[in-house]
Image 1: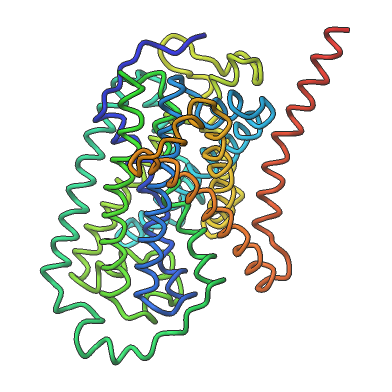
Image 2 (image 1 turned 60 degrees about the vertical axis):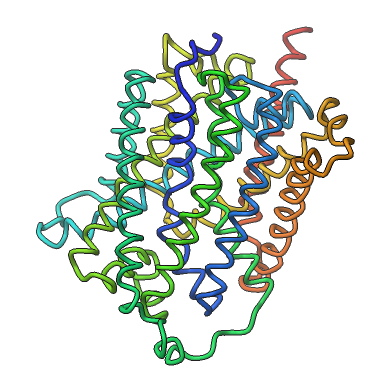
Length: 452
């Protein structure tokens, strides 16, 4: 079936991008990053560099979105520009990592921050493990099975409230600057920062890249966006720029407002946001920030549950997946249900830490291949030959994104081998990428048997 009548405007599309980006990574990654780099300034620089790379990626995706106005994301882009097998590979990456894994990670993040709030006043020993995470995925699935417009409006409102709460926290932190751990004399008391290590820095950037991965969310729902040729690129670039500013400000507060040894000790390493909040404003501020994070992560789950099944629907329309993945009336309900079940299964067998490195590496490699596909389009190649510096900026941004992503991936694998003896994340990423090619071979074999 074709895409339904477009109903999402620029504001709704931008909020989907923002909701997809502001997820579990920003509230958990910096604890691990600070532990590895041993330098708060390098943590902030890493988030800024990650933002620049993501903005360049959004510009590259925008060039593709101006060519293709249907839903389908990387699957659509790579199928039409490189080869159908590349598209199927990207579809499998989306199914296993981009949406299923990301939904599971966000839901587990909700549980990380919700658990302590509930346990402080209620005996939770009788509640089955991961009940909170699974419930969040189920609620998002029900919401998006009802109606696109309703789900989008609810999400717009929640994202707006979330942003107001985050801005409120940032404002409070700025006004409380004198209470920051590393201000004035206290920064000297923290000791000398560790020397710069390129391998470690690259590894942290790969983890951070997962927090920026949602910058391309608008391409998955392009067929439902009003004036998609204009609004999809605008939503991606605007949303990524705003989130980059927010990330840098938040992480500056996280790593400078609290003693590094407190941030990286025990369970605190996965709850850097609430640790910083308690340091700045006590228990009440910790509760407030935890609530902000819970709302934030739920909108991330909601956005991913909405966008993922649109890719599966497109793949079903092309005969790559069973027909029941296609749209039925106004929503791909069967695909949404499948997406939620798959995410719940991942929740039951994975941990948050295990998911972050794998998702960052897998998604960044797939995105780099997608942006590189620009150069398979004749019109884009012609445009890139223009002599104006302004006209060359999109092409330069795309090249920078691809090169930076590949260099970081190589350094990440080198670092993983040095630390663990085997590149476990790279192996899992390779398996994920290979499954798509294997599925393409199966489809071609089946097609050949039918024809004969």
